Image (tube, rainbow, N blue to C red; front, side):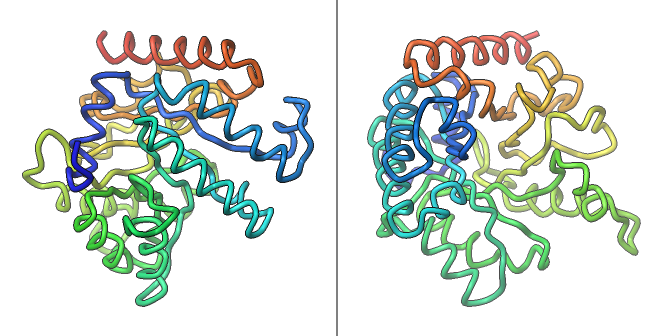
Length: 280
């Protein structure tokens, strides 16, 4: 597809063709050690290359966590650049998990780093934090529309501390999380087959029927696997919006490395479980 094809269109096609699974690329020190790798640039590069080579032709989305690369400084960022380029060249969509959020020219610079096709870190989508106000994300929204990229906005996250902000009630009676979902629904209005502006909604949160998750956009759902949620939980958590859920698995798949066949088998098992749950 053309690079200007909207992210939501490309994501829907990838989910339909490969299943909706997103695999995180999270090279933290303990995981590198479990692979028998040193916690250094060589280990980081070997880990990232192995994940991409093993899974790029079978999963819909990779989600590299920028912090685990940035901790190595410029050399780590160089590995992240190659990881993104290799994954996208192999046909896998890349959601950069950087959770950027700021105002004005700073937010515009963050957007340029990850959403400008001329940037070496250009990704298909970026996670962003709206907690300086949803309007602070405007530079990222604008550039995403121009470049055919997408955003995933933190709305109802799986970490327990998130509730103190996301479930706080505004003067109009709506929670902050519900407000973010409403903003995203407005961004995606009229988009077909799916909008490019998604929400991060934890798969571990249980019954979310009090929230309108029908935002006509993707719902990135961390929590499957090591955090305790299963694919079978998805319909109960997401209800009618389950078809737009992109479940994220990191440790559940990555712990099977560095054996490429084991990584592929684990990812296939999760993908099959998700397909079965969504179709039920």
